[in-house]
Image (tube, rainbow, N blue to C red; front, side, top):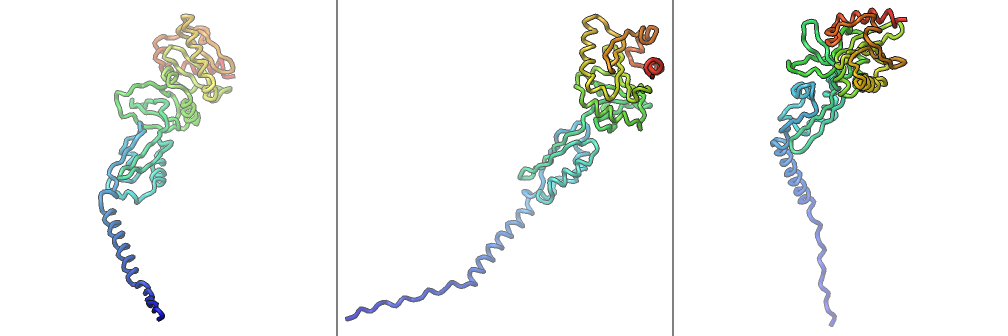
Length: 277
């Protein structure tokens, strides 16, 4: 007898409608999770950390960033915030980073402070290396940088001087107590500096970066020789001249120590006669 082979039934393809239902339910589940997530505190900014600021307040930087606690953590680009903060005149560089969950960090680099100036009313102002002038809010601030006196606000050499002072060490900035313009026919950017070690220094804004190292050396040499005053010229040559030889008569010690305006004006006219040509 011949054995009968069992008839194999053909498998019916799974219903496409059931697959669509599974995909729909999965999509609905993911959508529900997304809605719940974006409505939860995990998707919000919980803290804003601002670092690196010395001149500007955290509030000023935060206002420029235009981001507040509670805003959507994913609703903005870091580059857009950086651009807004960088528009502040005191900001040189800025970096914005996000840390999940909910932390936004803004790290700024301000233009360094290089000098002070005093308004006619007596209020102190600070100058940054880009020439920006800001009020000094701390009444007990230590004046550890040069005071710029006698400068016109529109003097182009004033801004250049601020840019130049950035290249000078903090030690030498603290040594210089005052800087006044002293232009001549030969040097339109000539300046007169008073040092805390009681020297008067003539140089130019252009020469200053390369000559500042010689100023420190010359002051040290004068101290070794027990010479505590005089005029130092840092121009083509570097020279020390006693006050009585430079000006033709002894200087007022108090005026010299304080770097008074009267002494500066007198020096300016005398310097015009001696060095103007």
